[in-house]
Amino acid sequence: MRQPLSIAVAQPRCAAHEVAANAVAHAEAVRAADARVVVFPEMSLTGYELDAAPVSPEDERLAPIVAACAGTGALALVGAPVPGPHIGILAVTGDGARVAYRKVHLHGDEGVHFVPGEHAVIDVDGWRLGLAICRDTGIPEHAARTAALGIDGYVSGVVHGEDEAGVHGERARRVAADHGVWVATAAFAGPTGGGFARTSGRSGLWSAGGELIAEAGTAPDDHVRAVFRG
Image (tube, rainbow, N blue to C red; front, side, top):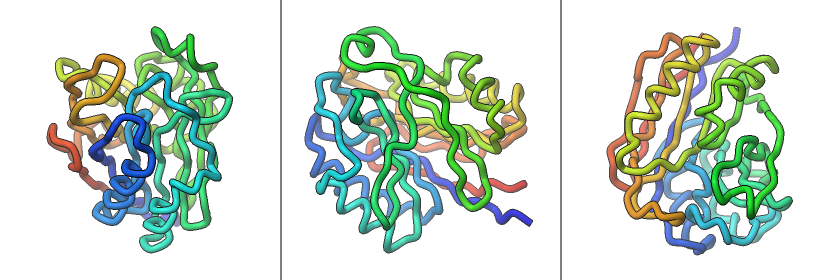
C-alpha cells in the first residue's frame, strides 16, 4: 500500500538575482519544513526577474539546497530560469539537481525571454505529482492534459500580486473538483521583480475533495505542511 506523502509549500525571502543567497534561504526552508517534498514559488531562486540568467542543474550555488535535502531526505522543487531558456522547476535531492519541468503557458513579456515547455509528472514514493508554474494553473487544459498522464497531485509554484491572494484557492478547488487530486501551491511573499512590489503569500495545500488543509501567512520565510493520503 502506498504510504502517505508529507509535502510543504514554502515562501522564502528572496533577493533579486542573488542565487547564492537565495539558495541558503531555500536550504533553511527545507530544514524547517520537515517534509518529503518542499515546493517553492515561481523563479524563487532569482526572483521574478525576466532577465535573470538561467541556472544550470550543475550550478555550484545549489550546493546548500543539495546538502539540506541530503540531511532531511527531502525533494525540493525549486523555481528558476533554466537553460533553453525556460521558466522551470529544478528537482533537487541529496544527489544533485535536474530540470523537472518547463513552464507551458507563458504570460506577457515572458514570451520575449523564454520558450514554452511540455507537461510533466514526477514520481515520489509512488505518488505521481503533476507540475505547473503560475499561468499554467489558470488554464484548465493544462491540468487536464497533465491529469491525462496519470496524477495523484497537482503541484505548482506561482507569483501573484497582493490583490490576487484568493486566486490560489479558486484554481486549486477547480483542479480538485475536475480531477480528484490533491493540490499544493507555493506563492511568493514579499517583493519580487516584474512589477510585483507586493505579493500575495498564502501558499496552501488542498485535499482531493477541494478542502483547504493548510495555508501560510503573507510574510516571507513562512511555510505550511500537510500529509497527502490515499
